[in-house]
Image (cartoon, rainbow, N blue to C red):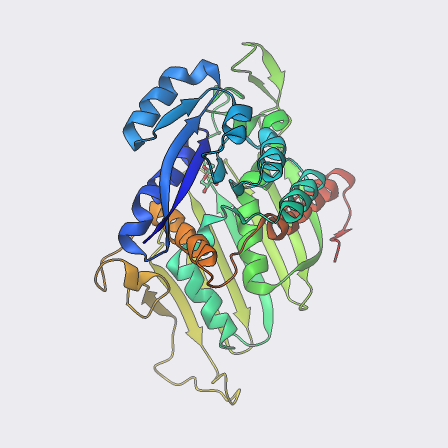
Length: 388
Ligand code: SOE
């Protein structure tokens, strides 16, 4: 007998759809004692028509137009927060105080202070929680984690991350409003740092451990944009582009770059880790491939490189690869939406009594601290230490 897990989701946009799809699909592919039930969806009164369509499309049983009402309902077990960042803190804290489990989109908050308050609230309430850093659940990225854990990279020297897109190049793109709130710092907290680099930082610290200190530079290329709500030209306060140098606690060096002005790059997120025994490279625009270069045997540390050695392009679709035995046959690929399903499957497994789920809000607070340090460093033009 499976136990129903009654979902109340807030937000009916891009992430609302990605999460709803995961709730609908997860039990078809992963065994769990828990079965998500789409109990209710919620959005602002201005979005009533869109919400009705959303509820019908995904099969939500009911609707709310005020998140406070949703959080107060007795028939909801889990609140899923898929709204702009400025609303995350209040909803997550209220949900935790009402004893609900929490799923929260990334970045968890506007800044580390808010994320700390959220982590404290879910811990005080003792409720299961997750932040949706979905890219950890790309099988090729999970495989990189496995390869590093097996000692195949050895002592790490360099970590290089890039996350580039190109959708804000035109000065005609407005800021604010439902579609483009990511360009409004009052709603998003920051620009590419919180939106894109937060992913790169989460992956980097997961794979290569904590960042100890960094120095950053940001740029805003288009200084004024029409605001979708006021209709007026207003100063742009987000970072359009950001680069930073980092030193990891393990002694390796990192470079991070992100922009929304890289013509031709749509969701180009890459990382490379170079170590004494080998290297890994990943590119999200080629998501089924993990590149691996093997130099030394992890057990002996002895060189095994010979005339056949070169970068291996591993097509990460075998049953032996992370998550893939739940999907199709070797060679048959999965996509973006499956990263949310894989993540939800891990979350349900933790509720079933399996391995602890990560990243929690506490874990994501780290990412938020690094993002805050990036913005601070760019402002003062100096190296900034990250709290231990
Ligand atoms: C921004 O364009 C965005 O949608 C991010 O907000 C997501 O987190 C990222 O996965 C794709 O790009």
